[in-house]
Amino acid sequence: MRVTANTFPDSLVEQLRLLQQRQYRLQHQAATGQRISLPEDDPTAMRRVLDLQAEGRSWAQYQRNATVLKEQAQAIYQVIRELKTVCDRAREIAVLADGTRSPDELRAYAAEVTGLIQQAVQSANRTFGGDYLLSGTRTDRPPFVLTTDANGRVTAVTYQGNQAVPECEIAPGVTVAARPVGANPDSTGPAGLLADARAGADLLNHLIALQNHLLAGDLTAIADTDRALLARDEQNLLVHATSNGLLQARLQTAIDAARQQTASLEGLVSNQADADLAETLVRLAQTQTAYQAALQSGAQLLQSSLLDYLH
View: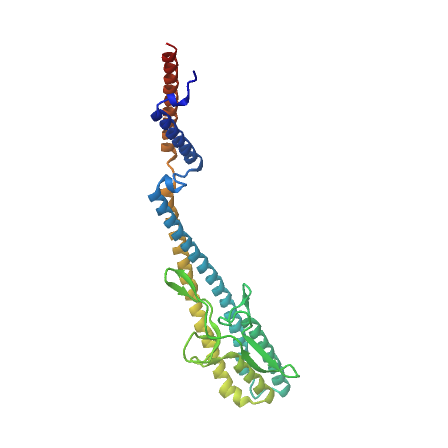
């Protein structure tokens, strides 16, 4: 007659199966350093780990958002510096253009102002990541377009952006805009960098007026009007420079906070999911010993069963 596996007690077979599964699980934990990798390993801990990982991804995204916004703010600050340089030179020209200057000198100053206008527009039409910085949410179009006459003199400037600014979340429920709009002719909304009705600033149009007054030799208009208007433009740029510096500091704080929060959450995940290597190795050795003992018991049972059958 044939002796089948059914002669073994079912409890021993089940014990061997469970010990083998436990041995494989502990070997996996020792190899990966992870206490849980499947929901059935520890359903409660797995749920907690998944929640912590989701929260960690959110904070990592906040950090990336704040980093991009800070880079945008740095690019904006460079634009402000360049515009400030243009404005400073225009104010110098407005002071130099007095009654001691010849018509040729005034025309030379006018030509320089024309160049300053073009330089200012080039700075204002700066892009970041393929988007125009000062167009509001119309990031696919340059904010400022110049109109020139046959002699290359600037006759008009058109703002193509809007007064909406793109915002980004840097912490739960906290949104920030890093980019000002190029121009805002209204009494509400974000402040315009080159033109703002509330500040009395309109840098490009004021430069065009200075250019025209130089060409016309209108020294009275330059002294009585242009100098004061350009002073407003400079003050507006200084206000934006201050706001930009404060924004960069705030964004750096947000970056640091998000980084710390992400690291803290990673630590919590580690506490939940990581295996204690020393403890795992001890448990693995114990399981292997138990498995070997169960195999030996099974072998002895088989030997006893065969002897009983032969007798």
